[in-house]
Image 1 (cartoon, helix red, strand yellow):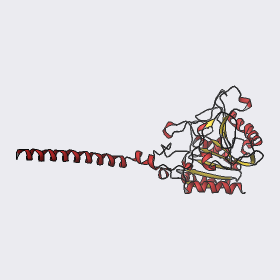
Image 2 (tube, helix red, strand yellow; image 1 turned 45 degrees about the horizontal axis):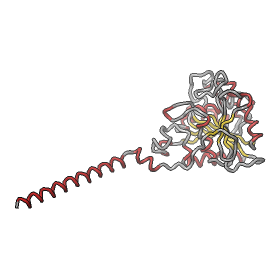
Image 3 (spheres, helix red, strand yellow; image 1 turned 90 degrees about the vertical axis):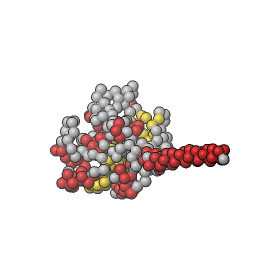
Image 4 (cartoon, helix red, strand yellow; image 1 turned 135 degrees about the horizontal axis):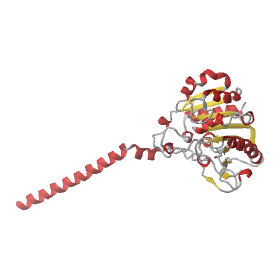
Length: 309
């Protein structure tokens, strides 16, 4: 009888241990499912990945580092991407991009080789894509924060954009200037700095920030100076995107609609991504067009409408 009781007791203990293990596994699974980081990593649905910048000769589908002849022997450089459908002797519209500042909180390095906005616009086809540098003071390297040597930055673009178009089948009559964050401001602060550089562009796309929206800590960042630059838009089309694009309209550009054909698109990046998702670690990101959305479609349709004009 005692042996039967002992056997029964052993069975009860085994069952209890098994039950505890099962419950432990169950709780562990529940924590994994509830953990947003684990869940996001399994649900990432980017349909674009920006090509890495490499050394070497340009070619279809390649993003390469280039040094302009006047900067040989320095670290100053731009990046050049030729589309997958590129062929010598063709004629391709051009996207010129300026990057954001170096800011670790949003994974922005400030480097031309890490820019993403222009690639999101084109999807890698149909456009030559150039990321122009901000030339650092001393003219030996690129500036990753703000403007460096502003005049050298302006001159670099004025010299090299026509050269790139001539050599790589870019259409100088169909150039879109775009930028993210610092680069959004640069579309005007650099891209409209004088009449010569202002004449290079057919349209403009900005994301997060706009020249004159607020005063920063560099010269001529005030609204009056910005309006002098923006007068050089001369009625051309401008697409203002961002998490608060309508605020830019309401507090600033709405009173100056005569300057350009403005379109405003609020982009809810926090809804497009379950942050952190992939390389998107902050709502302030130039990667938002690397995932399909109605907002990306709006940008692409807008760009095509500008090219069709």
